[in-house]
Image (tube, rainbow, N blue to C red):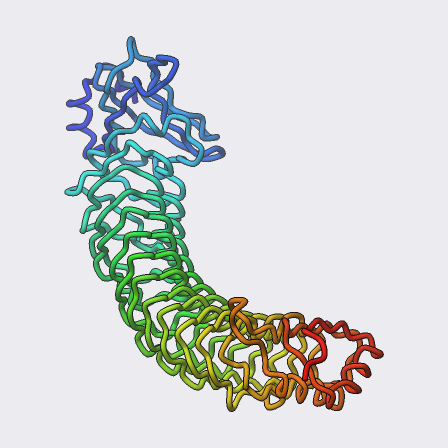
Length: 479
């Protein structure tokens, strides 16, 4: 049917509600006056269009050739994609679209049933969306919203927006400049990974009721100004890695049901304004690297259930304001490198670690700790700088830690923070050397004790270790 003689208004009246956008051809650097709609390669389209300068036409393609309308001069135009029975226009391809910057506004979504919106408006950074009109999303199709609104310029998002049969919102709203975000209906959405990733101006977001979510990885990562963590989930969640990482201003969050989440790596990484944590069900967590790292204002952490944790590297490190550490039961942990590194106010630490192999840097820079009573590391091999600069452990009996499997003790017993601090006492260091010679069968082990000295009771033991290839750096023989 030829509609070339119809005006935009009449065509829209006859054929029904249209998809209407405002388009600025002046955004081209080369003064190109074309209106170009980037379509999906390999996709069939058949639709009528009308431009505000009076041009009309029909675009039919089996392979997704772009719609190109030549105008007389660069200007702002209104383009209508006309709806009629049998029209084939269910997707736009915005990814790497050189014309995306020309889109200024979606005025109306029309009567189309949208079935694919993946990358549709990605990086359309001048685009604004009418807060009063919403698209009709197919309720029976798993509509792709991947990167759909990523890095667009709209200031307000419509509260009535629904996602139809979609199951994933991967990076859907990432990198936008929104300050607030409304509550939407997320029924049926299982995959939330990166949904609001790097929304660095986002300050307040209404509740995200992720009742069907199984994956909440990276959802609000790099939302630097976010004050309250809005996502609420159930025990359906199995992945929650980096959920609130780099949310520097976060002060509170909705309850997270993490009972079946196995990976919480970087969960609250660098949440510097948090003052307390809720008691989270972490019984099945296996990976928790950096999970609570740099939560520097949290004075006391809850007694999280970490019995199944395997890798807890740096899990509680850099928490300079923490005063007490609960008696965590790391029954399964094999690596706790830097786990409590730079907890500078903590005075006592007692943890259960029967199978841990890597404790490098575990208590390094814990300047105030005076006791590790109750700790044992019978299988620990890598103990490099484990107690580095723990300046108040100079009279601690390190034999009680049972380091019989250690293969690396480099700078482990260098306890001085400043040159004016005392090193490990001669008596305790001598006892340690004798114990290691008798109980640690490993050869070629590096051992560093700063300027700590040993007495005559340890001379034979120290020589025996050196004969077994140990490299020992200390302050030499003392009185």
